[in-house]
Length: 481
Ligand code: BG6
Image (cartoon, rainbow, N blue to C red; front, side):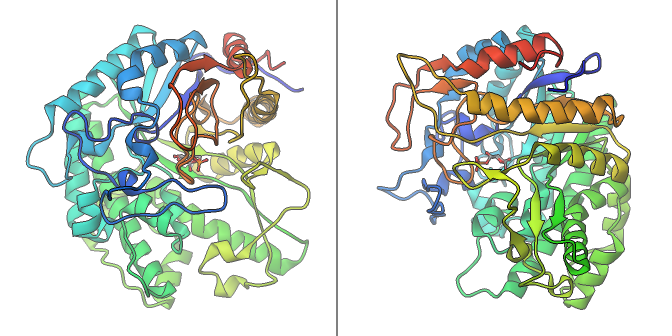
């Protein structure tokens, strides 16, 4: 298998999000977030979004893996693999429990002070997402999330408090996790998590899509204002965007499929285009105009977008996308998901996610060519069922997946000249799945004893992959076997 030494200072590590591992949902003055009103689902059953926290429902994020109380033990285990960086988010509701509070919570701020100090003890660089699917529920329910211009101010205030408080502890920041996911505007879960939009029954596709473009715009403005302010607070800050990048390819060699693939990509790239170039791509302006959506975009907003462009492009990569024009033509493209086809050349995970390591090299090349900025892989990995046998977890499938992806990543750096800051695979310690709320969909190098029913003593056990990843990091990417 191809391998190459990564550049000096390459950030090897892993990535998580506060709501998926911290638990302690109502401890330390924390308020209710959108993640706290989502029930457990499964590979086939979507999570339910309830109207507040209801008696008798199973909300897996409430306790998660109780990282809030176990973080010292967990950071030590991650440090044992030689982590150089660890990505997590700051739970918005630990700092502003309702989002519109006048003052931040000192107890919440102190928790992250202690967490970042613990990381620095082991020379682990914190990589921090400000908003990772955990908007205060109050903002979603009572303000309409990011469909409301006021939410820009709430977010920017949250960002300011975090930037000022942690200016000497955190250098790498991201504003919104997977901001491009909302191109799937028909997906209630993604719209609630990304933008705090709780769709009412009976809304049409057009109404949902219009809400998405409005919310995305206010998020662009909020992100640009935060970037600009962050650079003033500490000029050494590196503040990036974050997308869920998936190279799109046509199912057949037909020109119709090729055009559809290009259009699909255009609609996804739009989110990073605005944050890198500080302006809307022509095709998207035309699309919005054609559909008569008329989002509130002021001239002042356009200036802000230009002034707050990002320093790097972070992305998650799980799978590529294949599209077919059999059901949807490029000119009718609106709900992107309807054009997605099964790629017959790829294997799939137990949750149906296509496994495509070469797609990661394509992603790195595409984003480099388009943006000419440093890239950062801040999520990648395989969600899989694990079995404990005699207290051990043998997970060759996970090693196989990661090894192949790392090898393609190393080709992109060593052969294609991609400027890559680091590699942070998803969920280095088992945590609650965002999509399904399950514990049994595991990504970790460290097993956490808890199942989908919430049963388990929460003990932590390194899996075989733990020792493998330790060797990868030690060798700076040359030892993949
Ligand atoms: C990304 C998210 O979409 O994928 C993470 O940023 C999420 O929050 C990850 O956990 C994996 O998805 P899932 O549904 O398997 O948890």
